[in-house]
Amino acid sequence: MAKAEKTQDEKARQRTVLKASEMDPKFKYEISKLPGAEEVMLCFQCGTCTADCPISRFDDFYRPRRLIRMTQLGLKDRLLSNDVIWLCSTCFTCIDHCPQGVGIASIVRALRNLTVKRGHMPAGYKEQVSNILKTGYAYVISDMRLRKRKEKGLPALPKTNLKSVAKLFNATGFSKTLEKVKT
Amino acid sequence: MDKPKYLLFLGCAIPYRLPSYEISTRKVLRKLGVELVEMPDFNCCGFPTDPVSHDTMLTLAARNLCLAEQRNLNIVALCNGCFGILNHVNKELKEDKEVKEKVNGYLKEIGMEFKGTVTVKHLIHVLAEDVGLEKIKETVQKPLSQLRVVQHSGCHVNRPRKYIGLEDPENPTILKKLIEVTGAECLEYMDEPECCGAPILGVDEKIPLQLTRDKLDHVKAVGAQAMITVCPYCHIMYDLNQPRIERAFNEKFGIPVLHYPQLLGLAMGITPDKLALKDLRVDATEIVNVSSQ
Ligand code: SF4
Ligand code: SF4
Image (cartoon, rainbow over all chains, first blue to last red):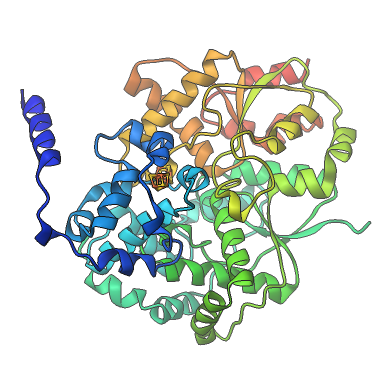
C-alpha cells in the first residue's frame, strides 16, 4: 500500500507543471563554462544517452537526457537538491554515443561539484576525501595489511607527503568548501 | 631493444583490498622481462575527488604525473580508474594550455610543474604493445586449451574514446587477445562492454548489485568457467560481492573471477600459490585443476 502511494506521489511530482520563476535562464551559461560541459546547449534531446545508460535501467528518475534538459531549462534548484545526480557511475557510454558531442557525464560532474559548493556531499565521498588528506590514499590501510604485505614479500607501501596534499587542497579552494560541507 | 621499464602506479584499492592482483602482476611481468620501479610518495590518483572538486582531481593527478616526470619514467597503472584519470589528465594538460597553466598555478605551491614528458599506460597496453603477443606466447608452457572464459575489460580502460582510442569500446579486443594467447577460449556474451557499477557503490548499493547480477547471469548463460578482469573495482564487484549477490537474489552463480595475470601465470606454469589464487572469494580450484591437466 505504502509503496503504491509512493509511486502515485512520484508520478504526480513528475507531472508537476514547471513555473517560469523556477527557471534560471543563466544557468546553462554557468554550466557551459565548466570543463567538459561546454556543449550543453547542443543537446537536441534525441535520447541516445538515456537508451544506453546502464543506470537508467534500474532507476525511475535517472535519465541523462532529462538531466541535460533540466540544465538547459535552468532548473537549478531542482537539480542541485536532487540526490539522483549522484547515481551516474561515470561509465562514459553516453559521451561516446552522443551524436552532438555533449559531455553528459561531465555535465553531471559539474552539477555535483556545484552541489558540493552549496555544502552537500554524500558521506562516502566525504570519507574518501578525508582519508586522502589523512593518508594520501582513498582508504585507510591498516597496520595488519601493511604487515601482510611484508609477509607476502611485497615492497613497503610508499608514504605520501601529506603536507603537499594539504597544500594542494588549499590551493584549489577545496579545503574551504569542505569546512562548509554538512553531508 | 631495451628492456621495458615502468614506474608502477599502484593506487589505493589494490593495497587496500586486492594484493592478489599486485602479486600476480609482479610475477608475470618479471617473467616477461618488464622492469617495475616503485613509485615513491604517490597519492590517490584523484578519481574519488572528481565528483566533488574537479580542480582537486586535476591537481592530485598532476602531482603523480610530475613525480613520474622527475624520474623520467612512464607510468603503468593496474587499475582502470587510475589509468583513466592519469591518462586523461596527462593528455588534457598536454593539449590544453589554459588548463595546464591553471594546474601549474596550484602545483607551484608545492614547488612542482607539469611539463608533459611522460605517458601513461594500463597493464594490458604494456602487455599487448610493449611485450607483444608473440613474446607472451613463448612463455606459455601449459596452454589452457581446456578452459572457456569471458573477458570484462571495464569502462575506464576504453572510455571516453576521445582520450584513449586504442580499441573499440563496444568491442574490446586487447584483453581478448591476451586471453587467447594463454590457449583459453574467450567467449562472447550479452552486454559485454557494460559497466560494473562500482563507482556508485558508496552512494547506492542496489543499482550496482543489480548490474553485477545481470552480468553474472549473462556470463553463466554462455557456460563460461571463469571471468577475467583487469581492474580492482570490477573485481570487487564480481568476486568479492558475488556471494552477497547470490544471497540477495537467491541465485547461484559460482563463477570464479581471475585477475588477468593470474590466468597468464597459470599458463606460464607458475604455481597457483605464487599467484595468490587462494585469495579469491569465489573458489577457483576447478580452474587450477583444469590448468594442471
Ligand atoms: S545523446 Fe546527446 S543529443 Fe541525444 S539526448 Fe543525450 S545529450 Fe542530448
Ligand atoms: S556516464 Fe553516467 S549518465 Fe552516462 S551512461 Fe554512464 S551512468 Fe549513464
